[in-house]
Length: 185
Ligand SMILES: Cc1cc2nc3c(=O)[nH]c(=O)nc-3n(C[C@H](O)[C@H](O)[C@H](O)COP(=O)(O)O)c2cc1C
Image (cartoon, rainbow, N blue to C red):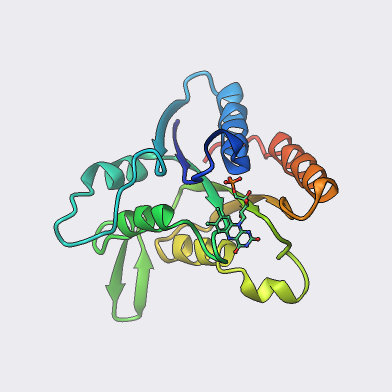
């Protein structure tokens, strides 16, 4: 099985999403000794903004080859980091991952399982602030657009509120990683 591991946090070793993606990948590796992991660090090796001149074949091909994608996605200003957006811009390619038909767009990248490690300083899962969440709903929508509906979110939120929220958020997220269903893509 091919697993594509993506990190996008700019916070290096202090990053919670990086800790979570590493734990998620380790959980998959523990169940599949033949797991082949491709790693892409979008903060250490930024893709830069998309333009007609940007060659993105490697990024697209490694995405297409993946059975499972583990995506580290912090919330930055209610959305995703610009480097993760640059990656999204490389994998949404007409004729490769979606196409337009008379009835509307059709996703071509189905059959993959995506696990998102979502981190945020505040709380958005419930209450009025949910309307400000352009991170998780965006990722679900754009992945759905290219045909991927098997999307799980491992969430650690409220990380920057106080020590109590942070400790609780980390414990909840670590438990969710341990409980990831053991199934193939
Ligand atoms: C540039 C930047 C923008 C951020 N914007 C938000 C935000 O809009 N809402 C929020 O709750 N937290 C925000 N945060 C806090 C991060 O989501 C939080 O620190 C999270 O842990 C980052 O993920 P990481 O630990 O993997 O780097 C922001 C952090 C940074 C660095």
